Length: 121
Image (cartoon, rainbow, N blue to C red; front, top):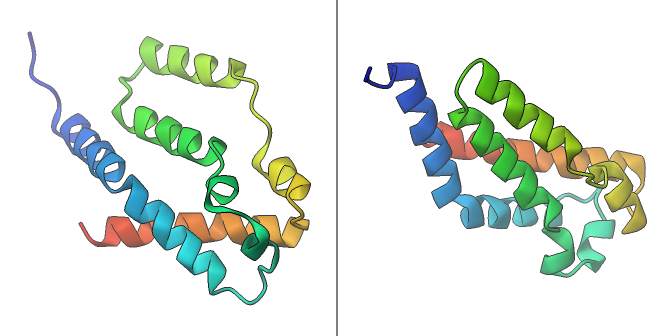
């Protein structure tokens, strides 16, 4: 059996790191949003509402794709994720009182927190 390619090991390690730092990333995201004066709707949400189960599921999907094999298995994983009937993030945030600009800023803060975690590596 051939050994795992170097890039696959690196991506697997990255996925494991993100998984281990999940709570810290989510906490940093909440702090970042709380400090944004353009995001007033977030302050009305509980932590459970703010970190809705959809966001951890999206992070799960990202981590799974980092570790997915190429070819057939990657295609199968994509198909599996497309079939899961999730409520789009923007719609979910709209139902929580966000306007479209706030939803985009909120999403951007999560991305910046992920990037900040990657910068630590």
